[in-house]
Length: 182
Image (cartoon, rainbow, N blue to C red):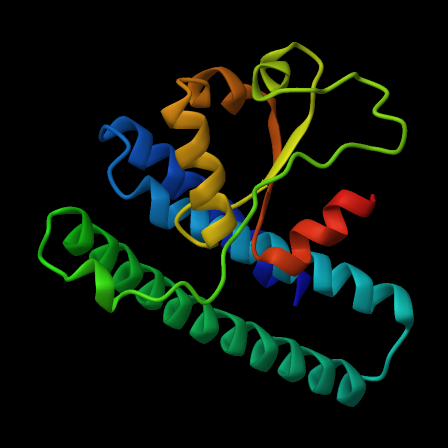
């Protein structure tokens, strides 16, 4: 199984190199494939260390595949819902909806989470642009918190300055919470 993954990874890297020569055509899809492959390799490395039987390994891999499929379906539904929400906000902004028909049922208060004691002295968004600051956000376009973070940083004209400091783009809110604990 490892040999197949290594060959697949080499093929993918070769494909990535070809995409670069063609002006980055399809690079986003290739990077998504590479990320998926990395996850599979991490799972295989974990399984190899557990000394499991072939049957146990197959069962775990099947469960992991099922869990990934559920996550991907959920992500797709959430992305569609977010798109509809954005369409509604745009319609409201353009006067195509009656403002009285809108009811606020929840809201989000964006925050900057820092380690206990705030050792880097982070007090503002501008502080996130400083060299040596490591920033973690939820992945924009996949997680609403990531979209919110990116939008706030773009509105304050800090996105391009903060972007080099982003070391984590979490795949969902739970992953972001786990990353913050590390």
